[in-house]
Amino acid sequence: MKAFVFILLFVGSTFFVSKAQTQPSTATTDTTFKELIGKYTFPDGSAVEKVEVILDSTGLSMTSDVGTSVLQQLGKDSFALVSFQGVVVFKRDENNKIKAVIIDAMGYHLEGKKEEVAVVSGPSV
Image (tube, rainbow, N blue to C red; front, side, top):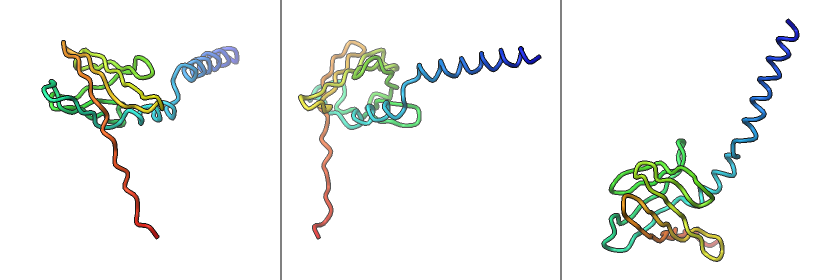
């Protein structure tokens, strides 16, 4: 009986240790994803005018006038656009800051710029 309990504990702990090693750190993932959050504007005449990248409890997603899709990470800055059978790649500038997004989905190639967020400062004292 003791051997059975020992084997059960050993197998169970091995399973949990292997899971811990294969799952990415959510703190690192959330920090990386937060860089991508924002609104992206496309040139006039594009299939969509704007998209917004959001992060919620289900993960990263992209929403626009044509619909919403979950973004499934493929690489550091590349994602599968699940609902539209496409690929999304975020582009960085020389300071490693996200500046644009490229979407290739359903026969469309779209390139949009990230909108800058205005920083509001408080009153001077």
